[in-house]
Length: 223
Image (cartoon, rainbow, N blue to C red):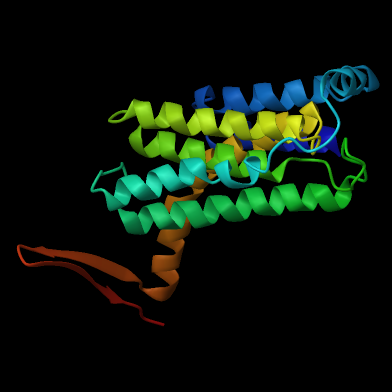
């Protein structure tokens, strides 16, 4: 199943946007690293290094940090590459991709976590964090790189804490980060096509309206 997951990442890279592989290098590298660390020796090293027990519940919260940064920036008036409506569509599409992938793998891969509980592969917390960080990077890397650095720092900290809390093996965290990044990249590629198809089928139009005294939009849907 891990090999199939890695194969799917490679397939996304080849089929989704053949002219450019740059954006897929990181998730592919993380996926390969996940495969390399899936062995008894790597697990034994982690078991010897990481103390037993739960260190902190912080990872349950900071996984949403990158997304919270982006929402805060939007509320604060910072403009990203996409308008709020399109950004919401991209976010919903990408969230569906990574949630379906991580939860599907958890259901299919029968393997215990370091603390003995079930459903270790792959790390949903890490996928959530890196998905949010990658979306943040797409929107603000050119204008506010400091926030992007903060987003990836929180994502990395989430993965590290999943290991420190004995909730995941290193291989789980590496694959979770790969899935999170790949899901964001795929969402940015697929969203324009999904929106165009939706508009063709439902004659959907959304027209922003900006005036000195108000902001608004008019929407029409035909069936």
